[in-house]
Image 1 (tube, one colour):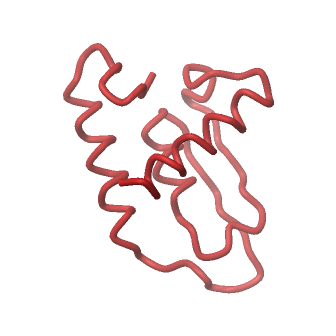
Image 2 (cartoon, rainbow, N blue to C red; image 1 turned 135 degrees about the horizontal axis):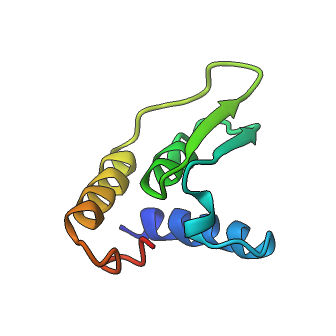
Image 3 (spheres, one colour; image 1 turned 135 degrees about the vertical axis):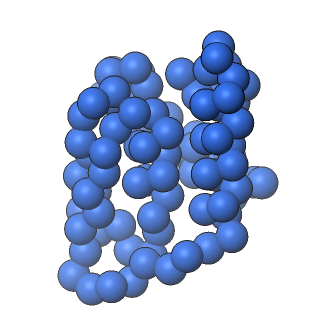
Length: 89
């Protein structure tokens, strides 16, 4: 779970740098240039109500077990009507 928490925290730090919060992402599209082998941005963006386009020079992305955990966190937050279970909104 540490890798997933790290990913979520880094995503939130980027939002803070832009002086945005998760609600601002709703209905927006995020473009990540140089995503490398990570699809985490797309999963987190989707969880926050946004779409994501990941762009790189090659097909580096890999399906990792941590993506399943991120998605499960998202599903748990969808069920939680208050959206506070993992700080989702």
